Length: 364
Image (cartoon, rainbow, N blue to C red; front, side, top):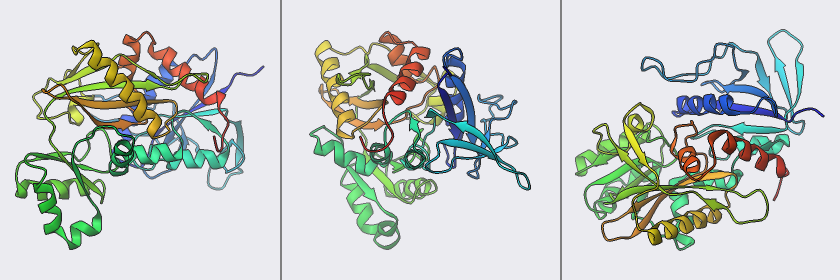
């Protein structure tokens, strides 16, 4: 029998392009080639799909972020066929065969937000991770918080700023934000990896922060600044009908002098530390793990997620957000939490592929 064919897809048309490549490099290193046939596929910054070039770079080198090398053969995935087609201008398209599962190591808009999931559903191809709705809700922090609050989970106060609100009714938006108290955090509603995030201490800084966030997304979220330790927990779908499992919680600390957990703290060396298990009371850890699973189920997630909390000085847990495709290098938080929980990075990659192979495309 032939081995299952796994397409690892990375890149994309957003500000997390490089983050996707870093994760994909780790996944490609970890996949068991004796068990799976692997096809690396890059999505260039202009949206073109290409077979990964032999010299494709996946890591940060000399401070330079990696990008998809678009010199490889152009690809298409026709809807309904499940087969990849390679083509070049002036040549006859060549069918490369079907794909059994896609591992989209992708983040941000036009990737993690349900768009690539919808494309794969139309193509009839199985894929790793959450479906269209969970991916879209998890990407949009405003709707995410609505769903989490509806599930009875504790969240911080926030204001959603839509494009029309900011252009036509800015004073109202600023007054609503001021009611949150200073400082506040301002972030694009549909971006990740701390891209476009600022901390504002007054109205002038707030206006600049919103304009900065709008460079990434016309829809912006303003959140009250939570005082507390950042505790994170990973959730993994079970292979059978058992409920999702939660990892050992870990505490993230910024070590590079940044005021908050920004892009450099997440992806550059020696800028953050992760303590696993987090030094919190056992009953708090169990409550946090149960809340993480509730968040996973509230969004109807599949595959894996990472759920981020604040543990306040008063002993309360506040859910910050859920990430349906968390950073996925071998040194990223979610894989490290699972490694500490007894599931190594290669085993985690294999589990996610097996979960995808076990489910059928379409409505579930």
